[in-house]
Image (cartoon, rainbow, N blue to C red):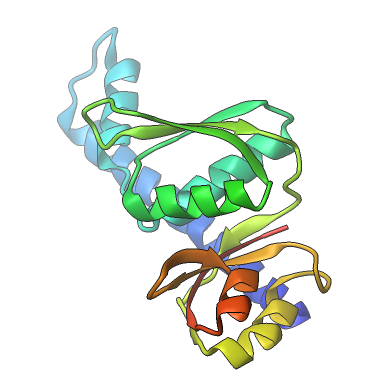
Length: 181
């Protein structure tokens, strides 16, 4: 359990470091190519949004939800939208951790407007996406969740995106995507 937490903390640290490097690179490039003007600050911010890449949109979506939960917000907007993110959100919603979920088309990848219920203590993605047999699910539950019967693992299976509890009932395995408790 401690090893998994240390790995998760290390991954978060690397992601934050990568964001800093991207912004430092963006600043260096923008200093050279955007002329100095009164609206330069606005131009720099717009260019940073274009330059910033998302390496893992699912991880970014879960971090946005967790940050909004920690700050006490009632809603959060997550973008970009994708089928896998939508399926993960629906699975989390069925488990009772999220309220209403609405897709909004903005012609730039779409976004989700999510009603938060204040039930999320921690959530994150599981990388690499480990393949897990149905009889190994209890071991993974011990690795990622704080207590038995507390929280869910979200996994993709041949039958779609489901929780680890549903996978145990159906006797199927799959790949772990995320955890939430």
